[in-house]
Length: 519
Image (cartoon, rainbow, N blue to C red; front, top):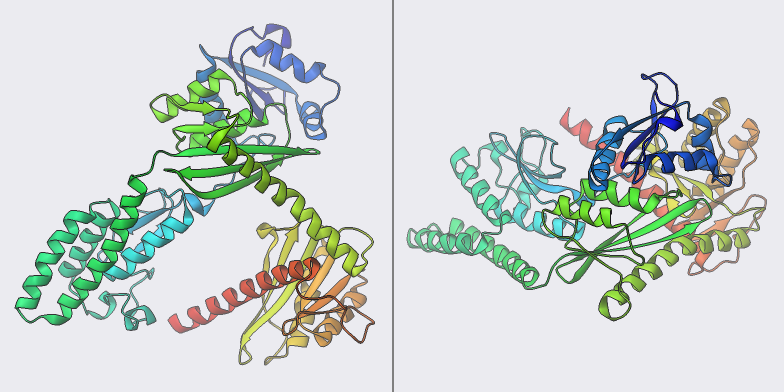
């Protein structure tokens, strides 16, 4: 460990620990142009944000590593953050947008969507657009009849009967012929569609000459699908280059950041992040994000960034990276569009909460809402779901699913009562946060069952139910539903939450049925 006086006026990385000993846990890693000035600023500054004040209070030791340049410091900072996962550095969770198409290394390879490193085989991607990835995946999967099942089943599945799988599980295709399809799929995924289509046309003519019309028709369908894919690829290749558009706004102690992905001149998607504010949040975001994702040829931002960051991006890209601060024109329009989307995303969610508070006459904005639904198949495989929305967005880390244990048959009232009892008895026992509003999928009967359980547990949380047919909202003590149109913002928000709970419950029900069939 070192004292502040021994820190040099040089670039490098500083490491804060929760103990003065060398084996203390690293709680924060930062990069500095001048280590001494940067670290001293933490202890001299008086008006820290609550998060930074908590960090300073937790610092018990300081260590540092000197580098020759700021770019080296940025590279080292990212390496140290990955290695130590410090609690006070922002955490970026990658999403499925960056998954690749994966052909597994098996006797009969299967096609799937996954990230590199998840299994052996060939990976194609990653795709900057989940929509584009899904399009390519569906075409290749269906065109070549590749299997998607984790294990070869003992009997043909629905995909085989729909003509989407060649049926290796039941011996409908030899290993040699299946492997030939896999090789064609690899060619298509690698972009070599033109030469592949040519060879397939030749084979189709040969098959037709031998009167093997069934296989000739299969080849014809494969060629049609590949021509569709080829046209898609040709359109993309004629466009310019890839750009990222980065916009952010600070709301209290939080940063909301929007990243637009512009691929060869076309806006392909957007990503949104939220994390605690700090002095260097933008620099930290750029370093972490582009260390995991290939930098674009041009980064469009609203303000100048440090020259060392530009050098850092160029180092990762392998060629000069451009950072543009547009004042007018098409790039400025893209930046304004990103800002507009960000404002709608952040403050639009607040508008939903306010409208729901007013419609239900709640004492405060329902920032945390939990919704329950029941799913079963003619009384069997009965399950319950609970989804949580926080500040207008799904909080999937707090989703819960329940297998109904105490109810026989398809008794929705008793099933709702069971899952509500299990959820809030546990929260009370563990002394955890209760939601601001509980939503039950159903009518007055389901609401009554849930309310009875809450009263027995002495849980005082506003509760309502939403009936599917006319989207009627029921409140305890009222014989008639509220006079709220289903097209109003408050009702639409409740429908969004209810639909997510329904989707989550149905997915669990299907999973149990699938497991039962495979046993």
